[in-house]
Length: 121
Image (cartoon, rainbow, N blue to C red; front, side, top):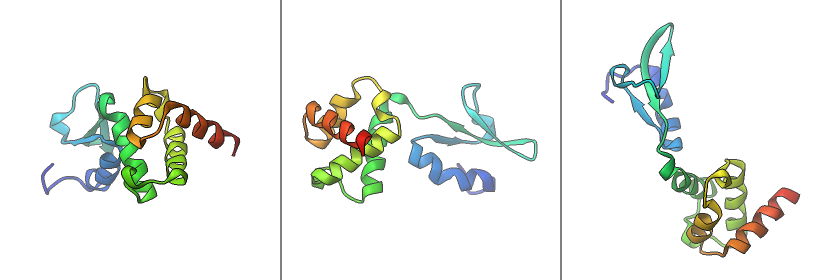
């Protein structure tokens, strides 16, 4: 977006980035996009992220939240990452347990154990 964007659009930029969404100008909106309305006027829009990349976006967000790259995570940090991913709904996505296990360098069984541990905590 250009430097002359509406303040609402500018304010939502970090949110859009964190969610993997795309900010749009008002003239770029399609019916599937979320219009950003300010005082009755559409000033921009938000395009939902492609769900094919959603899990990777969530894993990257967990790394950011924990302040540790996944390759450097210890067991406790991996458990915390799985807890966050579960809270964010990551495990509702198809094959997510397998994909998270691969990303964190653990087995599916370990992910299920972390999930069980987080739900009883």
